[in-house]
Every structure is written in structure tokens, then in C-alpha cells.
Image (cartoon, rainbow, N blue to C red):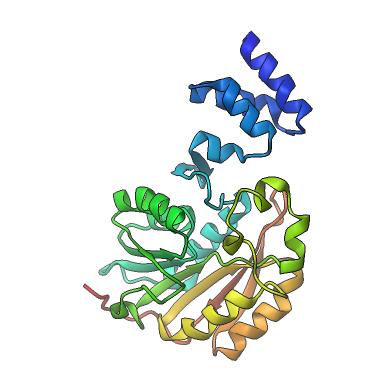
Length: 273
């Protein structure tokens, strides 16, 4: 470790950074004004915003100030999507159709699309900064990113044709925002965190519309907190979808919880051109 890194580690550790050594190494490798970066990190700015990227599912994705930083636990959402009936049952004579709502920087949808042999990928988000990063990440994968609320900006031609519908909707109850780490509540957009009184407000709107967009046998997947599982399963059941829950019991950090909801019938053939 160089003298610069040792001094940086000490500053970061004093600021409460748990992984000070790793963060110092990444900031030095990033280059530029390391002292200025250290000041911003010590003040609570997310490391990923300073680096300009976040790692998810073995790949780096562009991210920056004002954009939600995907958590490592969202890799469970990626794995569950790839194992879901909508993806696993795709007729390989046609591309899989993946729609990623509340996409943020697009890392989750991009990771799913990257693992499929042939895919049509669309994504949407309301935040302009998130949309800009999502386009940087998904355009090279052939994806199309729309700005708007949930399904509003999505092309109508995708109705009834989506094999995998992802939604990284905010699910933190409004009253719990104040208890989140400062780097989240002060540097990420509230619209990407705040799920309303019980954390399910955005998911209610999304689930109500989801069946009309799914192909028969298609799958809807989204994250929730462990104490929201019962309410989430009730939502998908009332929408006529068959729901189940996947937990990440091997995660070293806070384990993820993903709801997988499938529409009736096998995936059919023929995707929109």
C-alpha cells in the first residue's frame, strides 16, 4: 500500500467507512483529485457516485450523482428472473421480451438481458439522471430506455408480449426514510426510495397493470422487505397472478426478498417486431 493510500485509509476510517482499505484503493485507481474525492466520501457521498460505476452481477454499470445505487442483494432479482418461467420457457426461435420498470441506471434489466441469448429489452424510469445512465448502460445491449412513470412511456405494442417484467420499485415506508444511512437518504432521489405509508404504493399501481402486459406464462418480479411479503403476495393474487417468494439465504449482507408472480398458461410464440 502506498503512502497516499495509507493516508486515505486513515481518513476514510475516521469518517466511519467500514471498507476503508478497499475504498481507498478504488479511489486511487480512479485517479483525478484524490483529496477532493476523499473529502466528498468522508462527507457521506456514495462511493459509486464518485467512481462513476457500480458492480452488479459481474459487470460494471454507469451511475452517478442523483441516481439510485443498485444494492448487491439485487443480484437475487437477476438470478430469480433468469430462472423464472417467463425466461426459462422462452421459445428460442424468438427473442425474449424483457421490460424493466423503475430501472434506475438499468443494471438489473441489463444483467438479465446480458444472460439471455436473444432479447428485446425496454426500460423506463421517471428520473432524468437515471434515464441518462440507463441509456449509457443499455443502448450497447440493444435496449431502449423511456422516461416516464411505470408503463406510461412503454410502447403499446408490448402489451401481452412481455416474458420477464422487472420492477425495482421503491418499497421503503415513508416514515423509515429517516432511518436510512445518510448516503442513501441524502444522495439518492427520494422517488427511488419512498414507497408510501406501507412501502407498497408504487407496487400496487404496477401490479394492477402488470397482467395486461405479460405474455401467457410470463413472469413479474420485484423486491420487497421481509415484513411486506404477505401484503405483496395478496397484491399479485388479487391481480390474477400466481405468486411465490425467493429469499437469498447465502447473502453475506442483508438478504434479498423477491416476489415472483407468473401469469397463467405457457409462454406463446411470436414477439413484437
